Amino acid sequence: MKPRWTLHGYVLAAVIPAFLVSLAFFALLFELIDLFANLVKYIQNEASPAEVFRILGLYLPRCLSLSIAPAMLFATAYGFGVLKTSNELIVIHGSGVSLASFSVPVLLFAALASAGGFWFEDSAALPMLRLKKEASRALMGQTVTLNNAEIALYNRTTGVVWTADYFDDPGASLSGVTTVRRDPKGTFLERVDARRARWDGSRWEFLDVRIWTAQPDGSILERFLPAWNAPYYAESPASFRKGRKDLEDLNTQEALEYALFLKSAGLPFVGALAEAYERYTFAATPLVVALLSIGAGGRLRKNILLSSLLLSLTASTVYYVIRMVSLLLARLALVSPIAGAAAPVVFFLVLGILLFRTAHT
Image (cartoon, rainbow, N blue to C red; front, side, top):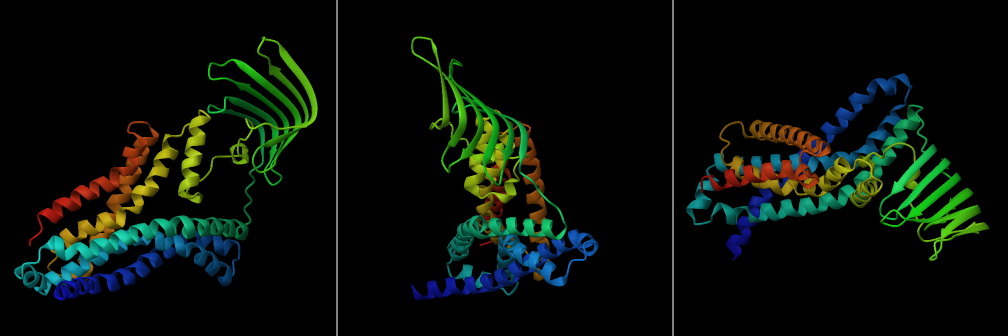
């Protein structure tokens, strides 16, 4: 058993250092892309170096998250390529150790990177990305208001139609509110007119209210109340904000909830749902590309460093092109949201299995 553990430690020692170095390299590459994309704006707004470096620092977690998959691809291809060119793979296979058995620790490490990357993306990268965007807007003098006017909203789940003259986002309040609630068959149940409504954390409290409620005998009961609330009126304040949300600013759970809200409101939701599902498939990418690069790494014979770098950059480009096309097809309802989200990963998984099965052992 000890020689096998020694062999597993040896292959990890060939991959992990390369992974850490390439992770830093790709993160730096993403940082430089963002820096040069906004460099003219920084100069025009006379941004100080400290302000620019603060924005770059806030963007670093997102860069690290995006770099995990290409770094894993490069490190695995490079590690196995070096073992191949030094003829060490021949010795290992000649001793009776199969490629599948030899690759287990690398695949386990890739699976750990996938799980850790998913957690890191949701808990650190996306919150810091929101702060980065806020800092960039503040530096460039841009303001974003989420207040909204002339609102009309329908929630299919609760059967409530909302109209309001104005929504104040900082105060979480509505002015000139009218709601109409109906059952699934479309039968009138209740209408609420209120001068104002405020969010209490779980539902809306209506002020200066006039209520019409359908009675079992078919009559309508009219009431006037200074304040009133009911569990049917728990629409999130985010539903009334101006403009569509940027899913890049939302964690996975929030993105799913937003897609389901769009669906319940009768708005286009397929694209948002596909992007929410894509969070899960993207998290599996390091494991998939590790499988791909194990099969490809043994085929590299010369200039291992450059060949591995070229392989990782090419695969990353192909991945993002397939992702862009598949999500576009999902938005156009030509494929299902799950198919649109899973297409890039499935493509590389099939390619990885093919290369792995045909690799020399």
